[in-house]
Length: 520
Image 1 (tube, rainbow, N blue to C red):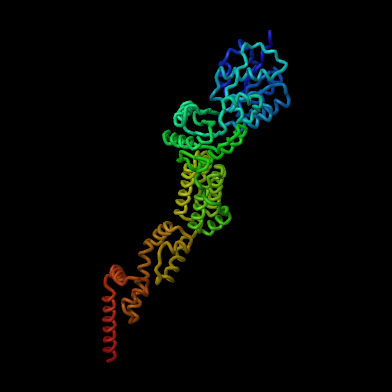
Image 2: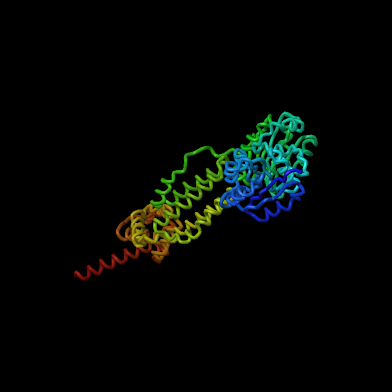
């Protein structure tokens, strides 16, 4: 009678461990579970104690994760074989783990009794000194399983003949699909119907939200495949499809997959509303431009050139949002860095940043976890609106009277010019809305009303002390329209400019008569 194969199960979730234990009749199949561990550190202790032939381990765990467990375990216990539990998103990790001695992997979405037994039986065959007592016969690997292993970098040299039988055509193309509740078999069937039923199509690395299809085709069928994918992308609302670069050797699949999946993640982040991307017709991204000069932005901010600073920032954010080949992490990091720097600047300039300080970690977290550019920008633009609101409340360290005196003096010096609130705001480095509110609050009347009073006062002096015509006086005090000047003059003084001048003349004549009579 043969020897039972000893197995150790490692996963930080007890329900996962219990599920694995209940998938198969272990003893009946010739296996013995010698222990369970919730992390790599516990597993190393149990391996030393029980010397299991096989360790089934998750990747993401506390204290010591699966990557370090495999690395350390193979170093200290070279005869122990490791099987990795992998989700679709963990594939990058699994690839690196093959270099450290992983014997095989199991995709979590496909984990079930027959799959677990099939993988275990295959790994048992790698253990030369084990005379296995199991009843399971080592099953043949399906073509899809072989192809999935190739994507991970697994050596399939011995199975090349099997693959050649199921891949009769000279060309290959990968099609990535993202969405919710994806059914890979349905997707395969739909594409076959759109092209022709005999086309070899394989669903690889499938989950509820991601599927990868490999199509093996003849050169003249490529355009039909593109049209079929385009049709399915339009039909299946809420899905995103990408046709990767075609290739003519199955040995190139891993390289094409790595490059294509990376590109798909990038384009999916920056263009979430686009349903189809094709390798030879990708959206054109913004041309390369100068890097953002953070020091320049900070100096503008310190000089209170807020409009210019925000325009510079927003233009660069728009530029980055159109650089589709940049990693989303780079984009999110830029936004987070700006949030941090603006809060520090506002605090140094004595603005009230209490509300922003409370919210800043929420901004960082939401931006970092954003699934697409729209979600990240919504949070970032919300932050900028909060900054603008704080600016409207004013600078706590500034002396309002001193600022107001400077503004009033400027108006006195430039009242003859076509003054606008926006021009004065730019001159004093204020936001125009903020200046309007600031002026009304500290002067008890609005900017326009005050400017009119200055101009009318100057016109009254000219009417009294000169013989310049009224139409010329209106231009001299800053009014481009004579009729508007007369209207404003009457509203403020209660009479027209002509009546005011006549009244002054009558007063002067009466004063002169009075002086003459006194002399007599």
